[in-house]
Amino acid sequence: MSEAEDFEIFLAAPPGLEPVLAEEAREAGFTGVVVTAGGITARGGWADAWRANLCLRGVGRVLVRVAAFRAMHLAQLDKRARKVAWGEFLRPDVPVRIEASCHASRIYHQKAAADRVARAISETIGAPVVAEAALRLLVRIEDDLCTISVDTSGEPLHRRGHKLAVGKAPLRETLAALFLRQCSYRGGEPVLDPMCGSGTFVIEAAEIATGLNPGRSRRFAFEALAGFDAKAWDAMRQGTPQAAPEARFFGSDRDAGAVRSATANAERAGVAGLCQFDCHAISDLARPEGPTGLVIVNPPYGARIGNKKLLYGLYATLGRVLAERFSGWRVGIVTSEAGLARATGLPLAPPGAPVAHGGLKVRLWQTGPLK
Ligand SMILES: C[S@@+](CC[C@H](N)C(=O)[O-])C[C@H]1O[C@@H](n2cnc3c(N)ncnc32)[C@H](O)[C@@H]1O
Image (tube, rainbow, N blue to C red; front, side, top):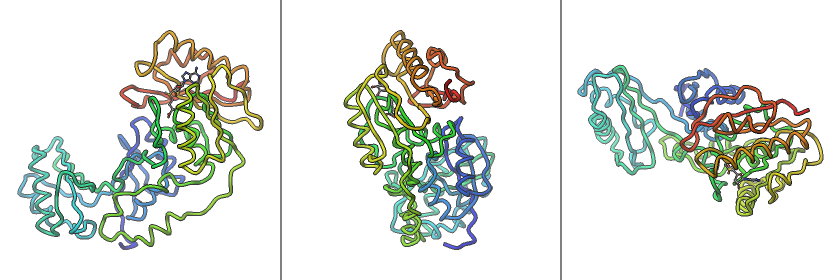
């Protein structure tokens, strides 16, 4: 793959958090970053797509745009699809699946569009096109413009490969990372989650502090593309080792199973030595010794778990405990209802954008350092 490659790379983000991902991508050195609906675009080559998969904590998947052309009718799609240099990125021996969508275009039949592209691939490079293939090509026809992208991620990127044990309503790691970033967490202070469930916030925070790449333990779809350079990829994955952070990371939950899961997940992620998980209710939460930091929590809410009246009481207890014992700490609360957030009685700033999570919209509510 040449140095001169310059593609559009689409980085998917949860709608509402696109600007937060844009900030992360710019800080990580990605160029040409533009916020769009459902993600951001950047420019770069294949190695930039690998790096986005490996390093960016907030991205859900990484698509590389490999072709764009006008197609007014199926015969034109057929002709132009045969001119795409498929062999530069697809291997004849690796099956691929095609997902097509059509919007506001003269070509409106998705299946017919997918069939034309499938035929172009089979008849030019001979790669099998099968519905069950792991490698995915996305064909999107909008306003008669056909764009073709390769999904370089495969499994969604929140599956980092460490959180195998989960309890009720776990947060996606990508979402947790973006909420931590929204709370201005950059790795230099302690983080505590008093309703930690499977430990998502605590483990993400510890990984950020340690400089561990989120994609270090998993495989990616781009490893099956033509021109994939395993040696260069290995070198990229090795990364630069970082010194162990001074900050510590705390999780607790009243559910013993959740605490066991969080501990096992932290061990798999290689950050157990920095994390402490305890089993107790929020009312027994004690302030850790040492510097102040961030309390970030995703308490039970709404239709997902439990009953409303109890929930208001739980949020009130959370707020009281934090107000009494956590002066100097900042607080971030992820919840679906403004009324529940307000029931904490904490001095909350206006909330962040609504973000889809498990069929509900959640928002991040934040305080400054508590008095
Ligand atoms: C929505 S889940 C948190 C999920 C977590 N963020 C994750 O990614 O796995 C809420 C958690 O709050 C815990 N919880 C509920 N009431 C509690 C209480 N009074 N004290 C401590 N934990 C409590 C539950 O056991 C559950 O694990």
